[in-house]
Image (cartoon, rainbow, N blue to C red; front, side):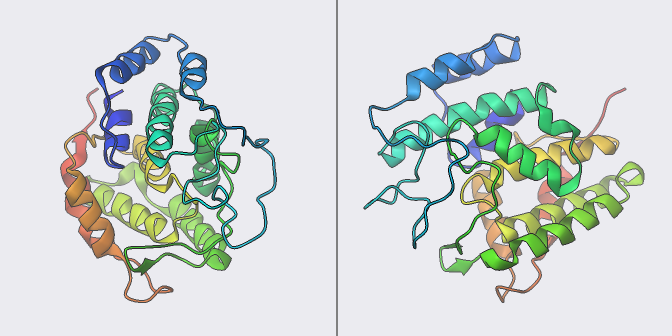
Length: 256
């Protein structure tokens, strides 16, 4: 539960006591997802089939005349969508951490795609689909949509070739930093890259002698590392260096 909350907090979530109680119940094996999904639904009528094709145009992911993402919950308010998305995805992250999710059986980038589909399926019809539009944030441009798959294939090959099982603390921190920096620059999904990326890291680190504990990571430090890791050119290579000290502190020897 703590790791699921930490991942959401890195994205700006401030859970209420009731939301934490729901996650605790999920950790105990209680099925809370259906009730939460019903509770957060809005009264809007725009709900898409999970397999619906994205609409053509300049803003296929947005509600008409809005900056709010199209969603399965009928929500038209950005703040309401963020809160609903946070609790729903946190529940599914808890299930991933407790090995109650199918994506755990996939390898490499296939696992990343499966994780995004699983974690965000309650919120977006395009969960698990690589974005079809270019993205930028705070003046920084992520990998062009047309090149995302090429980058993902490169990351996939690197993941399979990495010496996870023999990696010591320093090398494990480097491998995680390299992987996350590359995923962050690729930004393969329209939304949900951070949570999907950190969940993938948790699964990857299971091959090492360490566990990943993100509860002590400061959000401001995380955001700054993301900015500092960005390449100078859009097609350039991101730097893992800003993330290395963060992961070095977050890796703890596995007991037993």
